[in-house]
Image (cartoon, rainbow, N blue to C red; front, side, top):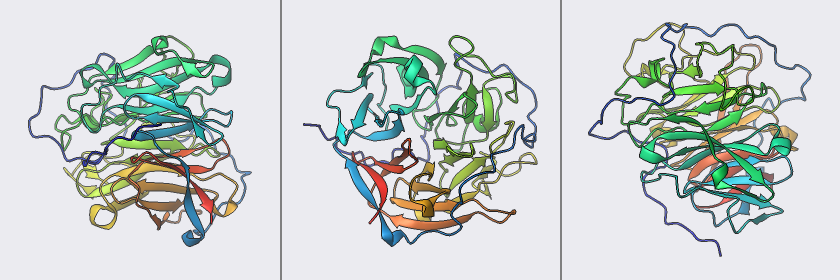
Length: 403
């Protein structure tokens, strides 16, 4: 029988900081660029596809849909990814990955790295997973976890049959974390074949080290690395700052995803105390976006000031109206075409789920509250058919379906 874990009261993602700051951070793998960043992203290098199926222009009636139970009994699941064979990989924060196949969870973990995962703080643990685009051939997958000293580790493992050897770990990056919160943790492969990683600003509250705006640290950034051209990785030649950094000015990016059809990148960035935001990088971007933290929280002044060209969020909500901690989601691309192109995201504390429709002709993004669930939403997921799943801290997995 699968075991349950008593839930912690504190939210897994949102926090306003600690009281006693430790020494300033350093990194075992850090960028070398000290160039002054551009204030505006460069023009796209490619144009997104145009021959796409019709996208939703209005939100479906949410009363006609529900989040249907798929699995339960997991210990604090935080991520869900498909492997292309019909199976879903589900990450447990304590250091396990389980496989869901034909409606059944594997009893034994596919991967167990509990021995090296540090989860002494509520926001630490095994936090993210991405399977290599050629996983069927090379059997490589990548994880993001907090390990020794609370540092962030981004590592590669190799699957073999129905399990993965914990000793197959190859550490790509180890990044020192000055505090036990704001670790980010999300991993995604883009259509360009590069691995993208979201890292928080290092924690405490108010970004005391200024990591979000500094190009001398990997904290508070989206990283972009090439895991195929060198060991353990190479920096893509077209990265905007000549190092691993792709975008910056983020506080705690908790779940980001690429639209599987267009390649656009959506980022859920957890706010400080007032505003939660969704950020957006269009397909074909050449990187360099500055999302404004800690000059800005959402579309509002935090420290105030800052350079011209900071990128505004495409959606935001205040804590009184929606909760405490945004969980980024996915653009729906499944069989229910009335949902096609709608980005779904939620809040950890309230269980609210919103939809976001991409505008045409320069119109404003459209946002609507669709579901008021009772779930502590730690993640969303998407299978190979484009269906969208919801992952709950209480141990359950659910899929959006018609009633």
